[in-house]
Length: 68
Image (cartoon, rainbow, N blue to C red; front, side, top):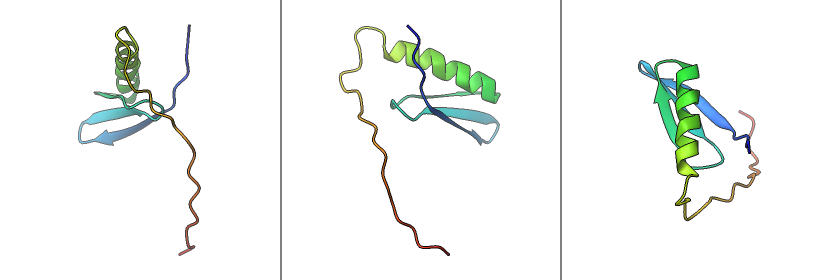
């Protein structure tokens, strides 16, 4: 069964970091595609038995910011 997760990707030095926004899992790679592929593998491992004991509940947070 396929599941779609949200990820944030940024560059730190020579490496790209990919962090899942739905589950506390991150990975890295030399390219953005490598980082996302590594994140996919890390997510597969995260959900293999034994499964993670705590699955975070992700909720939106509304914040009013002053216009600068």
